[in-house]
Length: 300
Length: 278
Image 1: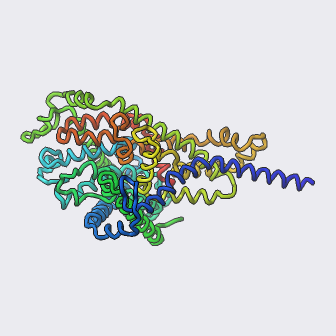
Image 2 (image 1 turned 60 degrees about the horizontal axis):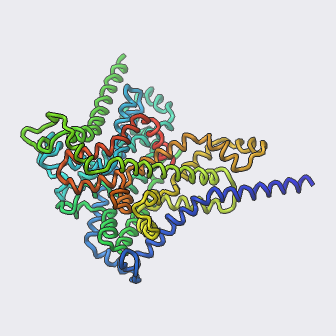
Image 3 (image 1 turned 180 degrees about the horizontal axis):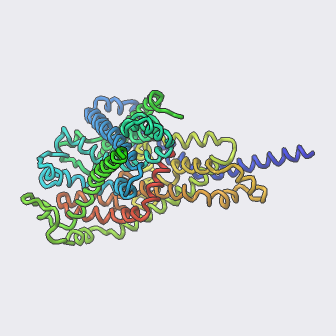
């Protein structure tokens, strides 16, 4: 009898957990279905349509949008621009972020002040950051050309503009990477360094043989998220490079192209195709990173 | 003795590196401030190049505040951010709690859905979300701004981690006291996740404040814009008057920067813990 009573109690508890669990989850799950799952399918569907007036009166065209995409030099150029930006921004911002984190992890005076300053760009609006840098880069009146005594067209020379933009990206995100690495450094046991100290290993040696391998899980996390963010770059390019800029086509990213096709040219079908391409690109790069991590990430 | 000397030398080197990096972080901000107080003639003078304004002029600030309703922009931005925070915190704490502390059929499925959403780049949602807002006739409203952030999978994931890190026997004691699951959640668990909720709030606020594409798409009317999208539009108007543009950037950036300087520890820890636990 006591056993059946206990069973009844368990069943009641389980039913309670089921009801409460789904009640708690409902807003989020319903929200995700409406705001995300449905849109994923809808975007893919719309990429197969030729669109009339912003998504209305559509004609099914199969893979026509994608065929056009493959033959569209603007798309290829945007892909190259996006990759160029990422290849510069991600490794440099990670390397600098890690070095700064290691330096700030030491007991030095003014740590908090340095940390606060380095993180500052994270709380500034990208539109403001972009305008400031556009002004700094100005070839005639800009501070940068004045300081270096140069006469470089930082953001209007098609050959270098994308790298100038990547520098802004690096500047904006170093502090964020650094803070993530600082959190990761707390996990490395101090005795490794003490042992290395006794063995007479230099600071640089310690950095490469202890810090770099042991921080690799953090590095992996930062790399994955930074690559995804870099492939979606939009704000800086949109704000710094206007359409009359000679470097316009050499800096326009995939996200920018998506925005332009969809919301300026009102070609929703083609814009959707661009975004599907971006999705595939991000998935492929992320999967490659997931596979490659086995070669270099050390988990304890 | 010798090692101590080397140690001191190293420290000096570290300070030199950090100072160089800090200065290069600050120069853009300082240049914004200096330019904002110059006249356009001073800003575009090259021989001699002018670093400090001869007179600290407020003309640019007066001009931009006359053409742009910054009070309205502040109000819109604050409302937008607060609503995003409330939505993220309310829905994510509940969902995160269910995923972390309850056992029920369909939990794994729900968690997969959350993870899936987190892996898809935001641009994929933009067109259908815009079409929904537009079908509802809600463009140019605060609701339109908040819409993509009504729920937060990131917040759900983050709070799930926070709830999972709490000890196991918490439920038992409360259950013996006769609390139901709702009460356990509200009175036992919620107070214990204050730091995670703070972190999520800061994270949500910073990313809402920095969002540019979505506000630009859904709210084109001046009265419903936020700081980021208004700045973007302003650039078209004042294309080459940099003192005015810098003054506007300064007005738009100062509140968040001041908040950050006051709560810098919470900001950095909030973003580090929430970003790092992903």
